[in-house]
Picture (cartoon, rainbow, N blue to C red):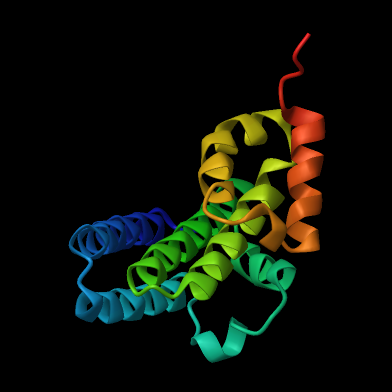
Length: 163
């Protein structure tokens, strides 16, 4: 990903986070609709395509699409940006009292973070706080099998053992 594109995406993500934080702080449901539109726009900018072209693809294919032609560091950055956008959507859905949609957005975000985290101890350590934050937003019984599998794998391989 070119530095200009990466800078643009980081700026867009920061603006999106600020917008979503303001909506969450005020609980303004009319602002929530605008925030969701901003998330959709940001996601389409990240993918460089309309949602209709990638939205129904399996997560692995979406991440492969984001990584295509990118260096490993840029691909990772784009995938983490995508996860952050999904988390933002979850916050907005929460403001709208759409608990099912919020949990779904959080779970997809967690899944993406876990896919990246379980690659190495350093990756897991870097993403540990985000994993715990997202995990706390989803009832454990609602975790989908692939998410739960990665979560358990990460905990087994990378969590510190107590003596």
